[in-house]
Length: 160
Image (cartoon, rainbow, N blue to C red; front, top):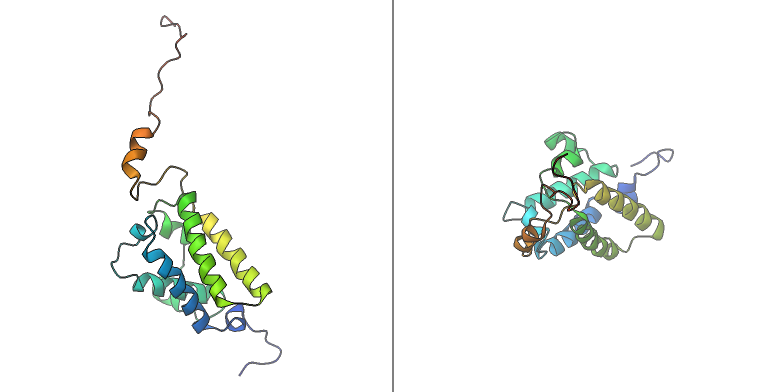
């Protein structure tokens, strides 16, 4: 029972644990078949990643603090630094999350609040603007990349 003077958390307002479980389940259904994002999950089974995201989102939105109790401070940028998160990966992540958010059928204010956070988080995780080295086109990208050293301009004076 909650005290009438204590406002509900966003976690409680949108349905608590069951809502976040649904959100994350739908999200990972999309990830499972994504040729860019799926290779970023080293585990064969997406279940552990699904559990971590559920716990993180629940804690962020005012639910149980299980995530921090089990894993410490979220440190999202640090935890994602090892992965090649470019704008393509960000946009794919957001596309799968958009499907998941839409399936919740939240009231407009709650939907906008959740979506705003998810967008900001996705943009904050971008750690490179280089083409991805993950996925079927990786070999072609290497051949098309710019050289590390530049050739001198054609009109450069070699005596200088």
